[in-house]
Image (cartoon, rainbow, N blue to C red; front, side, top):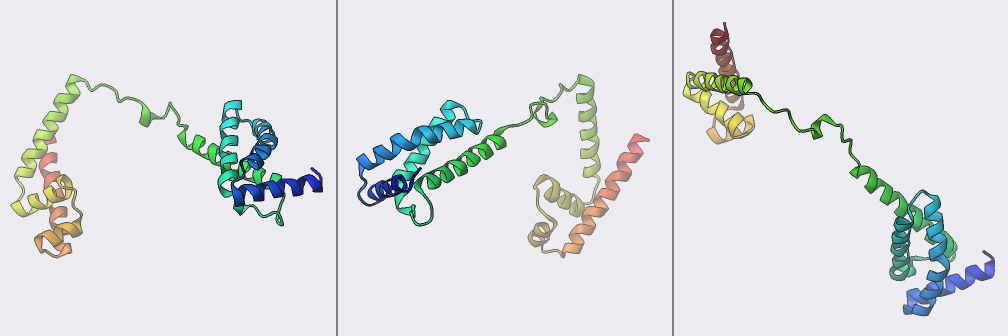
Length: 186
């Protein structure tokens, strides 16, 4: 692109910025759109993706032509820089959407067998019975921490007890539960 053409494009961009000159925009669109699309396709974009991105770039030209500074770069450089940045943004969005279909977290869990359901029900009943044997203050602390999801600080605040007391009661409750459950399993 020669200096005369650079100046002409800068003047057309200025007309778009200042007057929303549709004819100036049309000339710029006709010149740059196919070149931008070809460049984007060389960057491994499909024809449809490149065309869509060119539309976005030209919309930027229409709405933000006043940001173009002819003293800093040519209009071509400015538009191709926008194209490059938009292409990178598209790639980033695409890369974040790709997931590994073999990821175990995305696989359905195996069906639980009847014997495992019975074992789980038995275990749950033993735990409930063991919790029922705890002193009320320890039982309340466990319920607040594990069934209501409260932090130790929230339990201390709600009960008016010191934080250390809350932690001690929960620790004692676990120790007693462990002993009761170990005795039953022995």
